[in-house]
Length: 266
Image 1 (cartoon, rainbow, N blue to C red):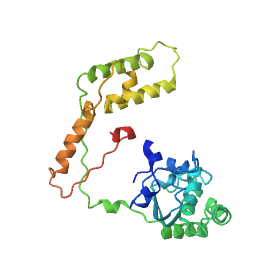
Image 2: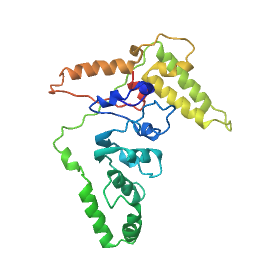
Image 3: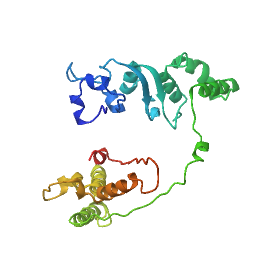
Image 4: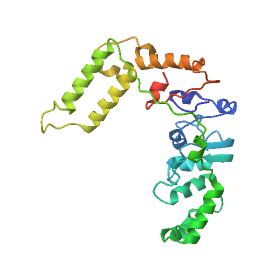
């Protein structure tokens, strides 16, 4: 079950109870305490005992005073798993925040770090370094690059997809307008709005995904369908070919990444 998006307000208490896995975001957990009415379901208000809580990109929960951290610590579970490639961001207390999420006593107490570990680490004391190493060996499962040796070679392809009519002409108009406002055609010394620059850059990017994302900048109304996106058409055709075993792969699987959630929701 996905606990996120515009329709999360329609979720009832029975939905997560009947689901094997519940997916949500740190944003949803962070606003869990901001209930508009008493009947609104949030992750915290479910008051469930979870079997396992998996925190992906766990280094994002470094601030102990942030709502997301406080609300996650309120959740009850048998197991907690933190996934991160960068447990240390800027300070030693970053990893202490992760250990607090794992609820490993006594190292989940900040004062122990500040009194017994951080001072020694700051001067390079061997006892402090050995203590930290033993702690990380106990709580951390590291995946080294050695496990990648059995994988097939990575193949990268850059595929140029034409927008097609009538979107090709509209795309040229967008680029010409952008160049006039912010590019080489702009008059010297002419002021410009940085927020508008990034807004238009994002709009042009999204237009290449699907023209519906730039509908506020298009003069005519269109009966939108997913086939209006040349990228989507190409993607679906290639996925169909791949998933039917065209590459002689048993049980093929595909993962699609995009910088825009709205594009994936199409």
